[in-house]
Length: 112
Length: 115
Image (cartoon, rainbow over all chains, first blue to last red; front, side, top):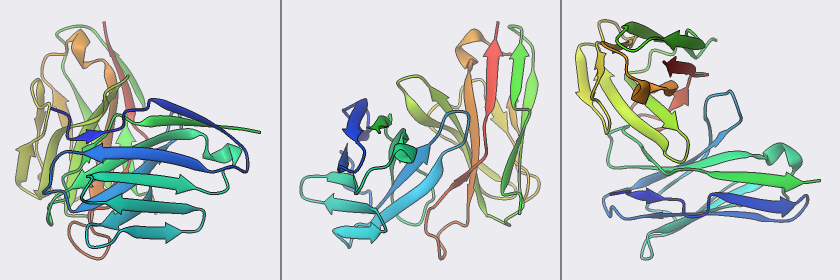
């Protein structure tokens, strides 16, 4: 039973436009959510996170929105740049335990 | 600051062989974990440790063994390699539950092929 779902395996956007990456979860005990970015042949790197007490967190071009009632979060990248082309993983955790549950990832391609 | 270091970067094994994937971190992190990444499967947790001397199973622990004798090191042992263990393995660490809540820092990975 997949608790964190990234249902779209890939997304292609034009440079300068907005990229919206979606993530759904089923476990209502999740209270902390993270997005990781991964380039080929490298380890995932932390991008942005949000606590369940918030509905939005912004860091430069990256904004994460959380809709707890819908158990849905999204990552917005504005404007998108070719260097953003990577695999993006959504992850979630409960309480103070650092154990993370990851989604399958979505491959973002930003076209010049 | 090296962060999380994994060795080796690549490894080819024959079925039935054993080996140890090494992971070391220099950030004095309490929490360490091992994941495997397979196509279309995302990252799946194998084993994790919340501190020296304490380990626990994750989602896919079968065929793997771990120990945590020091804060810095968290090796992953394959006791008898099988083709199903062909994967990319990532080690991660975090300063559990403190300022950077639950943010895990990953190594560059070990690509393992079992023939």
